[in-house]
Length: 434
Length: 206
Image 1 (cartoon, rainbow over the protein chains, first blue to last red):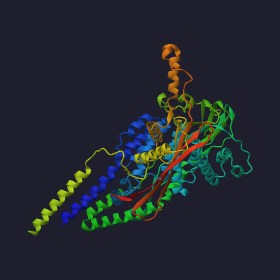
Image 2 (tube, rainbow over the protein chains, first blue to last red):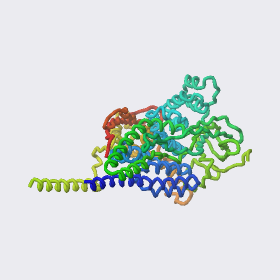
Image 3 (spheres, rainbow over the protein chains, first blue to last red):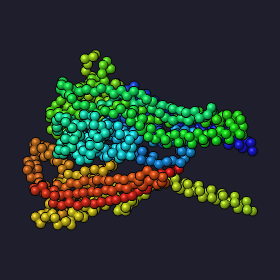
Image 4 (cartoon, rainbow over the protein chains, first blue to last red):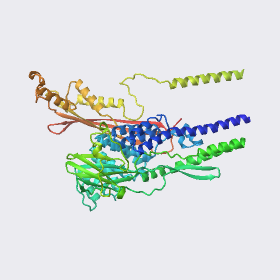
Protein backbone atom coordinates (compact mmCIF):
# COMPACT_ATOMS: atom_id res chain seq x y z
CA UNK A 1 0.00 0.00 0.00
CA UNK A 2 2.81 2.34 1.07
CA UNK A 3 4.76 1.59 -2.07
CA UNK A 4 1.69 2.40 -4.17
CA UNK A 5 1.21 5.77 -2.48
CA UNK A 6 4.92 6.56 -2.77
CA UNK A 7 4.85 5.76 -6.45
CA UNK A 8 1.80 7.97 -6.94
CA UNK A 9 3.39 10.88 -5.09
CA UNK A 10 6.67 10.43 -6.94
CA UNK A 11 4.76 10.51 -10.22
CA UNK A 12 3.03 13.71 -9.17
CA UNK A 13 6.34 15.32 -8.32
CA UNK A 14 7.80 14.19 -11.64
CA UNK A 15 4.86 15.55 -13.60
CA UNK A 16 5.18 18.89 -11.81
CA UNK A 17 8.90 19.08 -12.65
CA UNK A 18 8.34 18.03 -16.28
CA UNK A 19 5.66 20.66 -16.81
CA UNK A 20 7.98 23.23 -15.29
CA UNK A 21 10.88 22.31 -17.58
CA UNK A 22 8.65 22.07 -20.65
CA UNK A 23 7.71 25.73 -20.38
CA UNK A 24 11.35 26.82 -20.56
CA UNK A 25 12.36 25.51 -24.02
CA UNK A 26 10.51 27.91 -26.34
CA UNK A 27 10.93 30.83 -23.93
CA UNK A 28 14.73 30.61 -24.22
CA UNK A 29 14.60 30.71 -28.03
CA UNK A 30 12.29 33.73 -27.94
CA UNK A 31 14.62 35.50 -25.51
CA UNK A 32 17.58 34.80 -27.83
CA UNK A 33 15.66 36.29 -30.78
CA UNK A 34 14.79 39.35 -28.72
CA UNK A 35 18.43 39.91 -27.72
CA UNK A 36 19.43 39.65 -31.38
CA UNK A 37 16.74 42.20 -32.30
CA UNK A 38 17.79 44.63 -29.58
CA UNK A 39 21.38 44.44 -30.84
CA UNK A 40 20.18 45.38 -34.34
CA UNK A 41 20.29 41.91 -35.93
CA UNK A 42 16.76 41.86 -37.33
CA UNK A 43 17.37 39.10 -39.90
CA UNK A 44 18.98 36.77 -37.38
CA UNK A 45 16.19 37.43 -34.88
CA UNK A 46 13.56 36.46 -37.44
CA UNK A 47 15.50 33.28 -38.27
CA UNK A 48 15.72 32.37 -34.58
CA UNK A 49 11.96 32.81 -34.17
CA UNK A 50 11.46 30.26 -36.97
CA UNK A 51 12.99 27.64 -34.66
CA UNK A 52 10.09 27.82 -32.19
CA UNK A 53 7.61 25.00 -32.73
CA UNK A 54 4.23 26.19 -34.09
CA UNK A 55 2.57 24.09 -31.38
CA UNK A 56 4.35 25.97 -28.64
CA UNK A 57 2.35 27.62 -25.88
CA UNK A 58 4.28 30.76 -26.80
CA UNK A 59 3.16 30.72 -30.42
CA UNK A 60 1.37 34.05 -30.03
CA UNK A 61 4.53 35.70 -28.66
CA UNK A 62 6.49 34.45 -31.66
CA UNK A 63 3.92 35.96 -34.03
CA UNK A 64 3.85 39.23 -32.05
CA UNK A 65 7.66 39.45 -32.12
CA UNK A 66 7.89 38.54 -35.79
CA UNK A 67 5.37 41.29 -36.58
CA UNK A 68 7.20 43.92 -34.53
CA UNK A 69 10.70 43.01 -35.76
CA UNK A 70 9.65 43.00 -39.44
CA UNK A 71 7.85 46.32 -38.86
CA UNK A 72 10.96 47.81 -37.34
CA UNK A 73 13.03 46.59 -40.33
CA UNK A 74 10.61 48.38 -42.68
CA UNK A 75 9.35 45.04 -44.05
CA UNK A 76 5.71 46.01 -43.77
CA UNK A 77 4.25 43.24 -45.94
CA UNK A 78 6.01 40.58 -43.87
CA UNK A 79 4.98 42.31 -40.66
CA UNK A 80 1.34 42.47 -41.74
CA UNK A 81 1.38 38.73 -42.59
CA UNK A 82 2.77 37.83 -39.16
CA UNK A 83 0.26 40.05 -37.38
CA UNK A 84 -2.66 38.66 -39.38
CA UNK A 85 -1.49 35.25 -38.20
CA UNK A 86 -1.40 36.60 -34.63
CA UNK A 87 -5.00 37.83 -34.98
CA UNK A 88 -6.05 34.42 -36.21
CA UNK A 89 -4.22 32.72 -33.29
CA UNK A 90 -5.97 35.06 -30.85
CA UNK A 91 -9.31 34.01 -32.31
CA UNK A 92 -8.40 30.33 -32.02
CA UNK A 93 -7.31 30.78 -28.41
CA UNK A 94 -10.53 32.51 -27.39
CA UNK A 95 -11.69 29.73 -25.05
CA UNK A 96 -10.79 28.29 -21.65
CA UNK A 97 -8.80 25.06 -21.92
CA UNK A 98 -9.75 22.72 -19.07
CA UNK A 99 -6.59 20.60 -19.54
CA UNK A 100 -4.30 23.65 -19.48
CA UNK A 101 -6.01 25.17 -16.47
CA UNK A 102 -5.68 21.85 -14.58
CA UNK A 103 -1.93 21.82 -15.27
CA UNK A 104 -1.69 25.49 -14.25
CA UNK A 105 -3.36 24.68 -10.92
CA UNK A 106 -0.51 22.40 -9.85
CA UNK A 107 2.30 24.39 -11.50
CA UNK A 108 1.80 27.94 -12.78
CA UNK A 109 0.32 29.90 -15.69
CA UNK A 110 3.33 29.17 -17.89
CA UNK A 111 1.60 25.83 -18.50
CA UNK A 112 -1.11 27.63 -20.48
CA UNK A 113 -0.92 29.05 -23.99
CA UNK A 114 -0.14 32.77 -23.92
CA UNK A 115 -3.26 34.71 -24.85
CA UNK A 116 -1.94 38.28 -24.68
CA UNK A 117 -3.12 41.27 -22.68
CA UNK A 118 -5.90 43.46 -24.08
CA UNK A 119 -3.32 46.21 -24.70
CA UNK A 120 -1.18 43.83 -26.76
CA UNK A 121 -4.23 42.80 -28.77
CA UNK A 122 -4.86 46.46 -29.49
CA UNK A 123 -1.25 47.06 -30.57
CA UNK A 124 -1.57 44.29 -33.15
CA UNK A 125 -4.13 46.57 -34.80
CA UNK A 126 -1.93 49.67 -34.28
CA UNK A 127 0.99 48.09 -36.11
CA UNK A 128 -1.34 46.72 -38.76
CA UNK A 129 -2.93 50.12 -39.39
CA UNK A 130 0.55 51.62 -39.83
CA UNK A 131 1.62 48.71 -42.06
CA UNK A 132 -1.38 49.11 -44.35
CA UNK A 133 -1.12 52.90 -44.50
CA UNK A 134 2.56 52.62 -45.41
CA UNK A 135 1.70 50.00 -48.04
CA UNK A 136 -0.93 52.38 -49.42
CA UNK A 137 -3.81 49.99 -48.63
CA UNK A 138 -6.23 52.30 -46.78
CA UNK A 139 -9.16 49.88 -47.01
CA UNK A 140 -7.24 47.22 -45.08
CA UNK A 141 -6.12 49.86 -42.57
CA UNK A 142 -9.79 50.72 -42.05
CA UNK A 143 -10.62 47.03 -41.43
CA UNK A 144 -8.01 47.00 -38.67
CA UNK A 145 -9.42 50.29 -37.37
CA UNK A 146 -12.88 48.76 -37.00
CA UNK A 147 -11.43 45.75 -35.17
CA UNK A 148 -9.59 48.16 -32.87
CA UNK A 149 -12.84 50.07 -32.19
CA UNK A 150 -14.46 46.82 -31.07
CA UNK A 151 -11.59 46.05 -28.71
CA UNK A 152 -11.54 49.61 -27.37
CA UNK A 153 -15.25 49.25 -26.65
CA UNK A 154 -14.72 45.99 -24.72
CA UNK A 155 -11.88 47.42 -22.60
CA UNK A 156 -12.83 51.08 -22.41
CA UNK A 157 -11.10 52.07 -19.18
CA UNK A 158 -7.92 50.03 -19.65
CA UNK A 159 -7.22 51.22 -23.19
CA UNK A 160 -8.66 54.72 -23.03
CA UNK A 161 -5.29 56.45 -22.79
CA UNK A 162 -3.86 54.97 -25.95
CA UNK A 163 -4.15 58.32 -27.71
CA UNK A 164 -1.87 57.24 -30.54
CA UNK A 165 -3.92 54.18 -31.55
CA UNK A 166 -7.20 56.03 -31.20
CA UNK A 167 -5.97 58.84 -33.44
CA UNK A 168 -4.63 56.24 -35.87
CA UNK A 169 -8.11 54.66 -35.98
CA UNK A 170 -9.57 58.00 -37.09
CA UNK A 171 -6.76 58.58 -39.56
CA UNK A 172 -7.21 55.11 -41.12
CA UNK A 173 -10.96 55.62 -41.54
CA UNK A 174 -10.34 59.07 -42.98
CA UNK A 175 -7.80 57.65 -45.41
CA UNK A 176 -10.39 55.06 -46.58
CA UNK A 177 -12.76 57.98 -47.20
CA UNK A 178 -15.06 56.99 -44.33
CA UNK A 179 -15.15 60.51 -42.96
CA UNK A 180 -18.31 60.07 -40.87
CA UNK A 181 -16.94 57.08 -38.99
CA UNK A 182 -13.63 58.92 -38.56
CA UNK A 183 -15.42 61.93 -37.06
CA UNK A 184 -17.21 59.73 -34.49
CA UNK A 185 -13.84 58.38 -33.33
CA UNK A 186 -12.18 61.82 -33.37
CA UNK A 187 -15.02 63.30 -31.32
CA UNK A 188 -14.76 60.57 -28.66
CA UNK A 189 -10.98 60.97 -28.59
CA UNK A 190 -11.17 64.76 -28.34
CA UNK A 191 -13.63 64.46 -25.44
CA UNK A 192 -11.17 62.23 -23.52
CA UNK A 193 -8.05 64.18 -24.47
CA UNK A 194 -9.13 67.78 -24.95
CA UNK A 195 -5.66 68.87 -23.75
CA UNK A 196 -4.04 67.60 -26.96
CA UNK A 197 -3.76 70.16 -29.70
CA UNK A 198 -2.64 67.51 -32.18
CA UNK A 199 -5.89 65.58 -31.66
CA UNK A 200 -7.99 68.74 -31.81
CA UNK A 201 -6.39 69.66 -35.16
CA UNK A 202 -7.14 66.22 -36.63
CA UNK A 203 -10.76 66.30 -35.41
CA UNK A 204 -11.27 69.89 -36.58
CA UNK A 205 -9.85 69.29 -40.05
CA UNK A 206 -12.06 66.23 -40.63
CA UNK A 207 -15.12 68.15 -39.39
CA UNK A 208 -14.22 70.84 -41.92
CA UNK A 209 -14.03 68.25 -44.70
CA UNK A 210 -17.52 67.13 -43.67
CA UNK A 211 -18.74 70.71 -43.51
CA UNK A 212 -19.82 70.43 -39.86
CA UNK A 213 -19.59 73.96 -38.57
CA UNK A 214 -20.90 73.35 -35.05
CA UNK A 215 -18.41 70.51 -34.50
CA UNK A 216 -15.58 72.72 -35.80
CA UNK A 217 -16.53 75.50 -33.40
CA UNK A 218 -16.79 73.12 -30.44
CA UNK A 219 -13.43 71.47 -31.17
CA UNK A 220 -11.57 74.72 -31.82
CA UNK A 221 -13.01 76.35 -28.67
CA UNK A 222 -11.51 79.72 -29.52
CA UNK A 223 -8.30 78.40 -31.08
CA UNK A 224 -7.37 79.34 -34.60
CA UNK A 225 -6.85 76.27 -36.80
CA UNK A 226 -6.02 76.24 -40.50
CA UNK A 227 -7.46 73.57 -42.73
CA UNK A 228 -5.28 71.41 -44.98
CA UNK A 229 -5.74 68.95 -47.85
CA UNK A 230 -2.28 67.48 -48.11
CA UNK A 231 -0.06 66.28 -45.27
CA UNK A 232 3.00 64.26 -44.37
CA UNK A 233 2.32 61.88 -41.47
CA UNK A 234 5.38 60.58 -39.62
CA UNK A 235 5.08 57.66 -37.18
CA UNK A 236 7.86 57.58 -34.61
CA UNK A 237 8.51 54.65 -32.30
CA UNK A 238 11.04 55.17 -29.57
CA UNK A 239 12.55 53.18 -26.75
CA UNK A 240 11.48 49.80 -25.35
CA UNK A 241 8.44 48.72 -23.40
CA UNK A 242 9.46 47.54 -19.90
CA UNK A 243 9.11 43.85 -19.11
CA UNK A 244 6.69 42.36 -16.57
CA UNK A 245 8.30 41.51 -13.25
CA UNK A 246 7.46 39.00 -10.54
CA UNK A 247 5.48 40.14 -7.52
CA UNK A 248 4.66 37.87 -4.59
CA UNK A 249 2.85 37.73 -1.25
CA UNK A 250 3.81 35.24 1.47
CA UNK A 251 0.82 33.34 2.89
CA UNK A 252 2.73 31.05 5.22
CA UNK A 253 6.36 30.22 6.01
CA UNK A 254 6.43 27.66 3.20
CA UNK A 255 3.81 29.12 0.87
CA UNK A 256 3.37 32.23 -1.22
CA UNK A 257 1.43 33.41 -4.22
CA UNK A 258 3.13 34.98 -7.21
CA UNK A 259 1.73 37.36 -9.79
CA UNK A 260 3.04 39.53 -12.67
CA UNK A 261 3.45 43.28 -12.21
CA UNK A 262 4.62 46.28 -14.14
CA UNK A 263 6.72 48.30 -11.72
CA UNK A 264 6.05 52.03 -11.38
CA UNK A 265 8.54 53.58 -13.76
CA UNK A 266 8.51 57.34 -14.17
CA UNK A 267 6.80 58.05 -17.48
CA UNK A 268 9.40 59.83 -19.56
CA UNK A 269 8.17 60.98 -22.93
CA UNK A 270 10.74 61.57 -25.64
CA UNK A 271 10.27 65.07 -26.99
CA UNK A 272 9.60 65.13 -30.73
CA UNK A 273 10.17 68.23 -32.83
CA UNK A 274 10.02 68.60 -36.56
CA UNK A 275 10.95 71.04 -39.26
CA UNK A 276 9.63 71.25 -42.80
CA UNK A 277 12.09 72.38 -45.47
CA UNK A 278 14.27 73.86 -42.73
CA UNK A 279 11.51 75.74 -40.89
CA UNK A 280 10.16 74.61 -37.52
CA UNK A 281 6.59 73.30 -37.66
CA UNK A 282 4.03 73.80 -34.93
CA UNK A 283 2.45 70.32 -35.23
CA UNK A 284 2.01 68.76 -31.80
CA UNK A 285 2.79 65.03 -31.76
CA UNK A 286 0.10 62.61 -30.57
CA UNK A 287 1.86 60.22 -28.22
CA UNK A 288 1.12 57.08 -26.20
CA UNK A 289 3.38 55.82 -23.45
CA UNK A 290 2.86 52.11 -23.91
CA UNK A 291 3.81 51.21 -20.35
CA UNK A 292 0.93 53.18 -18.83
CA UNK A 293 -1.61 51.42 -21.10
CA UNK A 294 0.05 48.03 -20.49
CA UNK A 295 -0.19 48.61 -16.73
CA UNK A 296 -3.92 49.49 -16.85
CA UNK A 297 -4.51 46.47 -19.05
CA UNK A 298 -2.78 44.15 -16.58
CA UNK A 299 -4.64 45.65 -13.61
CA UNK A 300 -7.91 45.12 -15.46
CA UNK A 301 -7.51 41.38 -14.98
CA UNK A 302 -5.90 41.74 -11.54
CA UNK A 303 -8.89 40.18 -9.75
CA UNK A 304 -8.83 37.13 -12.00
CA UNK A 305 -5.08 36.66 -11.44
CA UNK A 306 -5.52 37.01 -7.66
CA UNK A 307 -8.42 34.53 -7.51
CA UNK A 308 -6.54 31.98 -9.59
CA UNK A 309 -3.40 32.36 -7.45
CA UNK A 310 -5.39 31.78 -4.25
CA UNK A 311 -7.07 28.67 -5.67
CA UNK A 312 -3.67 27.37 -6.84
CA UNK A 313 -2.20 28.00 -3.40
CA UNK A 314 -5.05 25.94 -1.89
CA UNK A 315 -4.53 23.05 -4.31
CA UNK A 316 -0.76 23.04 -3.76
CA UNK A 317 -1.25 23.17 -0.01
CA UNK A 318 -3.58 20.15 -0.14
CA UNK A 319 -1.11 18.14 -2.27
CA UNK A 320 1.78 18.98 0.05
CA UNK A 321 -0.27 18.01 3.13
CA UNK A 322 -1.19 14.64 1.58
CA UNK A 323 2.44 13.98 0.74
CA UNK A 324 3.62 14.88 4.27
CA UNK A 325 1.01 12.55 5.76
CA UNK A 326 2.43 9.63 3.81
CA UNK A 327 6.11 10.32 4.25
CA UNK A 328 7.95 13.29 5.71
CA UNK A 329 10.83 13.18 3.24
CA UNK A 330 8.55 12.81 0.23
CA UNK A 331 6.37 15.58 1.68
CA UNK A 332 9.37 17.89 1.86
CA UNK A 333 10.32 17.06 -1.72
CA UNK A 334 6.80 17.66 -3.05
CA UNK A 335 6.49 20.93 -1.06
CA UNK A 336 9.80 22.11 -2.52
CA UNK A 337 8.72 21.17 -6.05
CA UNK A 338 5.43 23.02 -5.66
CA UNK A 339 7.24 25.98 -4.11
CA UNK A 340 9.75 26.39 -6.94
CA UNK A 341 7.04 26.07 -9.59
CA UNK A 342 5.11 28.98 -8.09
CA UNK A 343 6.21 31.43 -10.74
CA UNK A 344 4.21 34.37 -12.06
CA UNK A 345 3.46 34.44 -15.75
CA UNK A 346 5.65 37.34 -16.82
CA UNK A 347 5.35 36.65 -20.54
CA UNK A 348 4.70 39.75 -22.63
CA UNK A 349 5.31 41.30 -26.05
CA UNK A 350 8.75 42.71 -25.30
CA UNK A 351 9.72 43.87 -28.79
CA UNK A 352 7.23 46.74 -28.68
CA UNK A 353 8.54 50.29 -28.42
CA UNK A 354 8.12 52.29 -25.24
CA UNK A 355 6.47 55.18 -27.00
CA UNK A 356 4.45 55.58 -30.19
CA UNK A 357 3.96 59.02 -31.69
CA UNK A 358 2.53 60.54 -34.82
CA UNK A 359 3.23 63.90 -36.35
CA UNK A 360 0.77 65.28 -38.89
CA UNK A 361 2.50 67.99 -40.89
CA UNK A 362 0.22 69.93 -43.28
CA UNK A 363 2.01 70.73 -46.54
CA UNK A 364 1.40 72.30 -49.92
CA UNK A 365 1.63 69.96 -52.92
CA UNK A 366 5.26 69.50 -53.98
CA UNK A 367 8.51 67.92 -52.83
CA UNK A 368 9.49 68.37 -49.20
CA UNK A 369 12.16 67.57 -46.65
CA UNK A 370 11.12 66.77 -43.08
CA UNK A 371 13.62 66.73 -40.24
CA UNK A 372 12.55 65.05 -37.03
CA UNK A 373 14.37 65.43 -33.72
CA UNK A 374 13.62 62.76 -31.13
CA UNK A 375 14.72 63.35 -27.53
CA UNK A 376 16.53 66.35 -26.22
CA UNK A 377 19.95 67.35 -24.98
CA UNK A 378 22.91 65.10 -25.67
CA UNK A 379 20.77 61.96 -26.18
CA UNK A 380 18.76 63.39 -29.07
CA UNK A 381 18.64 61.93 -32.56
CA UNK A 382 17.92 63.88 -35.70
CA UNK A 383 16.62 62.10 -38.78
CA UNK A 384 16.03 63.67 -42.18
CA UNK A 385 13.41 62.41 -44.61
CA UNK A 386 14.24 63.76 -48.08
CA UNK A 387 12.33 64.07 -51.34
CA UNK A 388 8.85 63.43 -50.06
CA UNK A 389 6.57 64.11 -52.97
CA UNK A 390 3.04 65.07 -52.01
CA UNK A 391 0.19 65.58 -54.45
CA UNK A 392 -2.93 67.69 -53.83
CA UNK A 393 -5.24 66.01 -51.32
CA UNK A 394 -2.70 63.27 -50.63
CA UNK A 395 -1.35 62.07 -47.31
CA UNK A 396 2.08 60.53 -47.41
CA UNK A 397 3.13 58.24 -44.56
CA UNK A 398 6.65 57.67 -43.24
CA UNK A 399 8.07 55.85 -40.22
CA UNK A 400 11.05 56.34 -37.98
CA UNK A 401 11.87 53.14 -36.13
CA UNK A 402 13.60 52.99 -32.79
CA UNK A 403 15.71 56.09 -33.29
CA UNK A 404 17.81 55.12 -30.28
CA UNK A 405 18.84 51.81 -31.84
CA UNK A 406 21.02 51.01 -34.81
CA UNK A 407 18.82 49.67 -37.59
CA UNK A 408 20.36 47.71 -40.46
CA UNK A 409 20.02 48.73 -44.08
CA UNK A 410 16.84 47.52 -45.73
CA UNK A 411 17.02 45.48 -48.89
CA UNK A 412 15.53 47.42 -51.82
CA UNK A 413 12.91 44.79 -52.72
CA UNK A 414 11.40 44.97 -49.25
CA UNK A 415 10.96 48.72 -49.31
CA UNK A 416 7.37 49.51 -50.26
CA UNK A 417 6.69 52.30 -52.72
CA UNK A 418 5.57 54.73 -50.03
CA UNK A 419 8.71 54.32 -47.95
CA UNK A 420 11.88 56.10 -48.94
CA UNK A 421 15.13 54.26 -49.51
CA UNK A 422 16.90 53.62 -46.19
CA UNK A 423 19.70 56.01 -46.97
CA UNK A 424 17.11 58.75 -47.16
CA UNK A 425 14.93 57.58 -44.33
CA UNK A 426 17.57 56.87 -41.76
CA UNK A 427 20.21 59.41 -42.72
CA UNK A 428 21.49 61.09 -39.64
CA UNK A 429 22.48 64.72 -39.78
CA UNK A 430 24.75 66.39 -37.25
CA UNK A 431 22.81 68.14 -34.54
CA UNK A 432 23.56 71.42 -32.89
CA UNK A 433 24.38 69.50 -29.70
CA UNK A 434 26.84 67.17 -31.41
CA UNK B 1 -17.90 -15.84 -14.39
CA UNK B 2 -19.12 -12.29 -13.62
CA UNK B 3 -15.49 -11.08 -13.36
CA UNK B 4 -14.72 -12.65 -16.73
CA UNK B 5 -17.65 -10.83 -18.40
CA UNK B 6 -16.60 -7.58 -16.82
CA UNK B 7 -13.04 -8.00 -18.06
CA UNK B 8 -14.23 -8.90 -21.56
CA UNK B 9 -16.66 -5.94 -21.62
CA UNK B 10 -13.92 -3.60 -20.48
CA UNK B 11 -11.52 -4.90 -23.14
CA UNK B 12 -14.19 -4.46 -25.82
CA UNK B 13 -14.98 -0.97 -24.59
CA UNK B 14 -11.27 -0.12 -24.70
CA UNK B 15 -10.89 -1.43 -28.26
CA UNK B 16 -14.02 0.51 -29.34
CA UNK B 17 -12.71 3.67 -27.70
CA UNK B 18 -9.30 3.30 -29.38
CA UNK B 19 -10.94 2.70 -32.76
CA UNK B 20 -13.09 5.78 -32.40
CA UNK B 21 -9.99 7.71 -31.36
CA UNK B 22 -7.93 6.52 -34.35
CA UNK B 23 -10.76 7.16 -36.83
CA UNK B 24 -11.44 10.57 -35.25
CA UNK B 25 -7.79 11.60 -35.56
CA UNK B 26 -7.37 10.51 -39.20
CA UNK B 27 -6.84 13.32 -41.72
CA UNK B 28 -9.47 13.46 -44.46
CA UNK B 29 -9.93 15.33 -47.73
CA UNK B 30 -13.11 15.43 -49.78
CA UNK B 31 -14.60 17.45 -52.57
CA UNK B 32 -17.69 19.43 -51.71
CA UNK B 33 -20.43 20.77 -53.90
CA UNK B 34 -19.77 24.50 -54.50
CA UNK B 35 -23.54 24.95 -54.68
CA UNK B 36 -24.04 23.65 -51.13
CA UNK B 37 -24.27 26.09 -48.25
CA UNK B 38 -21.56 25.46 -45.63
CA UNK B 39 -20.61 27.71 -42.70
CA UNK B 40 -17.98 26.84 -40.08
CA UNK B 41 -18.49 30.07 -38.13
CA UNK B 42 -20.30 33.40 -38.43
CA UNK B 43 -17.60 34.94 -40.66
CA UNK B 44 -18.01 35.70 -44.34
CA UNK B 45 -17.31 32.68 -46.56
CA UNK B 46 -17.71 31.40 -50.12
CA UNK B 47 -21.36 30.45 -49.55
CA UNK B 48 -22.08 34.09 -48.70
CA UNK B 49 -20.23 35.27 -51.79
CA UNK B 50 -22.33 32.96 -53.93
CA UNK B 51 -25.59 34.10 -52.33
CA UNK B 52 -24.65 37.78 -52.79
CA UNK B 53 -23.58 37.35 -56.43
CA UNK B 54 -26.66 35.26 -57.39
CA UNK B 55 -29.09 37.74 -55.80
CA UNK B 56 -27.58 40.87 -57.31
CA UNK B 57 -27.00 39.41 -60.77
CA UNK B 58 -30.61 38.15 -60.78
CA UNK B 59 -31.82 41.63 -59.90
CA UNK B 60 -29.67 43.32 -62.60
CA UNK B 61 -30.83 40.89 -65.26
CA UNK B 62 -34.52 41.39 -64.54
CA UNK B 63 -34.56 45.13 -63.84
CA UNK B 64 -36.58 47.40 -66.09
CA UNK B 65 -34.86 50.52 -64.78
CA UNK B 66 -31.98 50.19 -67.26
CA UNK B 67 -32.88 50.88 -70.86
CA UNK B 68 -31.54 48.05 -73.01
CA UNK B 69 -33.57 48.81 -76.16
CA UNK B 70 -30.77 50.85 -77.74
CA UNK B 71 -28.33 47.96 -77.32
CA UNK B 72 -26.46 46.35 -74.47
CA UNK B 73 -25.44 48.98 -71.90
CA UNK B 74 -21.68 49.33 -71.42
CA UNK B 75 -20.52 49.10 -67.81
CA UNK B 76 -17.25 49.82 -66.05
CA UNK B 77 -16.68 48.28 -62.64
CA UNK B 78 -15.16 50.42 -59.90
CA UNK B 79 -15.11 47.54 -57.46
CA UNK B 80 -16.72 46.96 -54.09
CA UNK B 81 -15.51 48.81 -51.02
CA UNK B 82 -14.93 46.63 -47.98
CA UNK B 83 -16.38 48.39 -44.93
CA UNK B 84 -16.56 45.28 -42.75
CA UNK B 85 -14.33 44.29 -39.83
CA UNK B 86 -12.84 41.41 -41.79
CA UNK B 87 -10.11 41.33 -44.41
CA UNK B 88 -12.36 40.28 -47.31
CA UNK B 89 -11.16 40.32 -50.89
CA UNK B 90 -14.19 41.97 -52.47
CA UNK B 91 -12.54 41.63 -55.89
CA UNK B 92 -13.96 38.11 -55.91
CA UNK B 93 -17.52 39.46 -55.69
CA UNK B 94 -17.10 42.08 -58.43
CA UNK B 95 -15.32 39.60 -60.73
CA UNK B 96 -18.13 37.03 -60.32
CA UNK B 97 -20.85 39.63 -60.92
CA UNK B 98 -19.07 40.80 -64.06
CA UNK B 99 -18.58 37.22 -65.29
CA UNK B 100 -22.25 36.30 -64.84
CA UNK B 101 -23.47 39.49 -66.52
CA UNK B 102 -21.17 38.94 -69.50
CA UNK B 103 -22.30 35.32 -69.76
CA UNK B 104 -25.96 36.42 -69.66
CA UNK B 105 -25.19 38.59 -72.74
CA UNK B 106 -27.23 41.56 -71.52
CA UNK B 107 -24.38 43.95 -70.61
CA UNK B 108 -20.96 44.80 -72.02
CA UNK B 109 -17.95 45.57 -69.82
CA UNK B 110 -14.86 47.71 -70.18
CA UNK B 111 -11.66 46.32 -68.66
CA UNK B 112 -10.43 49.05 -66.33
CA UNK B 113 -7.74 46.84 -64.78
CA UNK B 114 -6.12 46.27 -68.18
CA UNK B 115 -6.12 49.92 -69.27
CA UNK B 116 -2.43 50.46 -68.63
CA UNK B 117 -1.57 47.26 -70.51
CA UNK B 118 -3.95 48.15 -73.35
CA UNK B 119 -2.28 51.55 -73.69
CA UNK B 120 1.21 50.03 -73.56
CA UNK B 121 0.29 47.44 -76.19
CA UNK B 122 -1.28 50.11 -78.43
CA UNK B 123 1.80 52.32 -78.10
CA UNK B 124 4.03 49.38 -78.97
CA UNK B 125 2.00 48.64 -82.09
CA UNK B 126 2.08 52.28 -83.13
CA UNK B 127 5.86 52.44 -82.65
CA UNK B 128 6.51 50.81 -85.99
CA UNK B 129 7.18 47.23 -84.92
CA UNK B 130 3.80 46.06 -86.27
CA UNK B 131 2.63 46.32 -89.90
CA UNK B 132 0.32 49.31 -90.38
CA UNK B 133 -2.54 47.09 -91.58
CA UNK B 134 -2.34 45.02 -88.40
CA UNK B 135 -2.11 47.94 -85.97
CA UNK B 136 -5.10 48.62 -83.70
CA UNK B 137 -6.72 51.94 -84.52
CA UNK B 138 -6.48 54.69 -81.91
CA UNK B 139 -9.65 56.38 -80.74
CA UNK B 140 -11.95 53.42 -81.21
CA UNK B 141 -12.32 52.32 -77.61
CA UNK B 142 -15.81 52.14 -76.18
CA UNK B 143 -17.11 54.61 -73.63
CA UNK B 144 -18.96 53.39 -70.55
CA UNK B 145 -22.64 54.21 -70.03
CA UNK B 146 -22.70 53.26 -66.35
CA UNK B 147 -20.37 52.83 -63.39
CA UNK B 148 -20.95 49.63 -61.41
CA UNK B 149 -19.85 50.00 -57.79
CA UNK B 150 -20.88 48.79 -54.36
CA UNK B 151 -20.13 48.51 -50.66
CA UNK B 152 -20.01 45.53 -48.34
CA UNK B 153 -20.73 46.42 -44.71
CA UNK B 154 -21.01 44.42 -41.51
CA UNK B 155 -22.37 44.92 -38.03
CA UNK B 156 -21.07 42.58 -35.37
CA UNK B 157 -22.43 41.95 -31.89
CA UNK B 158 -21.04 39.71 -29.19
CA UNK B 159 -23.08 38.38 -26.27
CA UNK B 160 -22.39 40.48 -23.15
CA UNK B 161 -20.01 39.04 -20.53
CA UNK B 162 -21.93 36.86 -18.08
CA UNK B 163 -21.84 33.33 -16.66
CA UNK B 164 -22.46 31.04 -19.60
CA UNK B 165 -21.10 27.93 -21.33
CA UNK B 166 -21.33 29.21 -24.88
CA UNK B 167 -20.33 32.47 -26.47
CA UNK B 168 -22.77 33.78 -29.07
CA UNK B 169 -21.88 36.12 -31.89
CA UNK B 170 -24.23 37.85 -34.27
CA UNK B 171 -23.00 39.13 -37.65
CA UNK B 172 -25.04 41.09 -40.13
CA UNK B 173 -23.70 41.64 -43.66
CA UNK B 174 -25.20 44.10 -46.08
CA UNK B 175 -24.02 44.33 -49.67
CA UNK B 176 -25.16 47.31 -51.69
CA UNK B 177 -24.64 47.56 -55.47
CA UNK B 178 -25.54 50.44 -57.77
CA UNK B 179 -25.33 51.60 -61.38
CA UNK B 180 -24.56 55.28 -61.89
CA UNK B 181 -25.40 56.87 -65.23
CA UNK B 182 -22.19 58.55 -66.44
CA UNK B 183 -24.03 61.15 -68.48
CA UNK B 184 -26.47 62.34 -65.85
CA UNK B 185 -24.80 61.24 -62.62
CA UNK B 186 -28.08 59.65 -61.58
CA UNK B 187 -28.18 56.33 -59.72
CA UNK B 188 -30.20 54.41 -62.29
CA UNK B 189 -30.40 51.13 -60.41
CA UNK B 190 -29.58 49.96 -56.87
CA UNK B 191 -30.20 46.85 -54.87
CA UNK B 192 -28.85 45.14 -51.80
CA UNK B 193 -28.51 41.72 -50.17
CA UNK B 194 -28.58 41.14 -46.43
CA UNK B 195 -27.24 38.16 -44.52
CA UNK B 196 -27.65 37.76 -40.76
CA UNK B 197 -26.02 34.90 -38.89
CA UNK B 198 -25.58 33.78 -35.30
CA UNK B 199 -22.78 31.47 -34.22
CA UNK B 200 -22.10 29.85 -30.89
CA UNK B 201 -18.71 28.66 -29.58
CA UNK B 202 -18.13 26.70 -26.36
CA UNK B 203 -16.24 28.71 -23.75
CA UNK B 204 -14.71 25.61 -22.16
CA UNK B 205 -12.79 23.05 -24.20
CA UNK B 206 -10.51 20.20 -23.26
